[in-house]
Amino acid sequence: QVRLVESGGGLVQAGESLRLSCGVSGRIVTDMAAGWYRQPLGKERELVATISIDGGPNYLDSVKGRFTISKDNAKNSVYLQMNSLKPEDTAVYYCTLGTFFGTFYYPKSRWGQGTQVTVSS
Image (cartoon, rainbow, N blue to C red; front, side, top):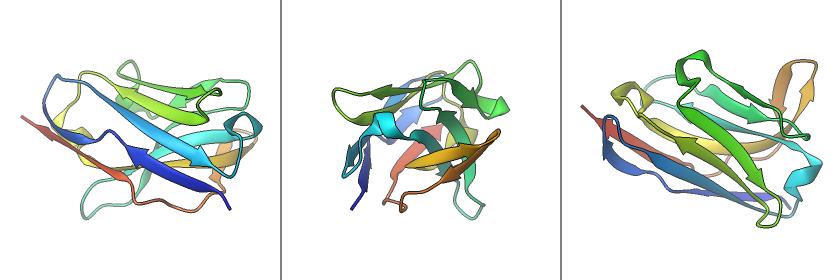
């Protein structure tokens, strides 16, 4: 059974950085694409970043140039480096494993508990 555990969230001030980690068990990260979603309180979940099997990244327009998604095959983990954080980045962040159909990313793994990121102004 695939299990994903997110960590690394916290409370930071605007302009600071955080690095989110996603430990994966039950599946090798090289076998699938991966993605990070976020859900602000009271709002819908949105896809923030994806990384394909061959490592190609894609980002939500509002985080381009600030966030970087990566995979560490040796640690079987997925990461999201978040720089120049803004208050509007405040949300619970979730990682997933999934597949691409064309340019669309479809999560295949179950949702974990996520990790809370809070950015104060």
